[in-house]
Length: 78
Image (tube, rainbow, N blue to C red; front, side, top):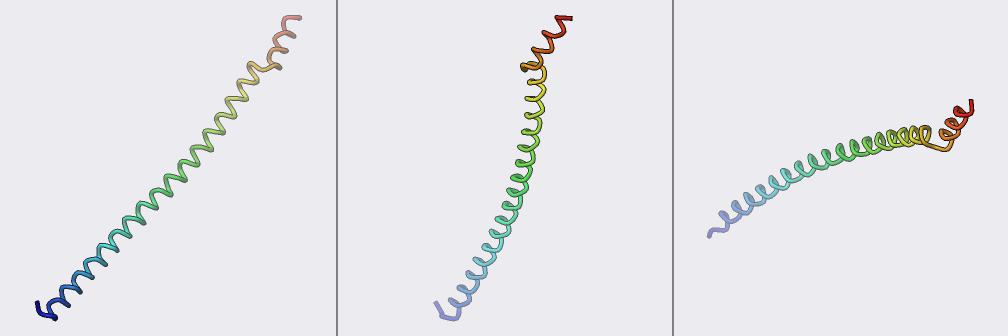
């Protein structure tokens, strides 16, 4: 093999590796962006779930809690 040919092959190989590296980096950036968006949406859904659970618990307490039992007893006395 001639040294000049080897140098051209090595340069072509290096260019190919650099191209593959750039492609891999763009895929990584795309996936990272999607992951961040999904994580943000997940956090918003968790917050919404907690809000709805608090409302539900409050409604249960108002309906079946001790105060609700007292109201029922007071109505029977009238």
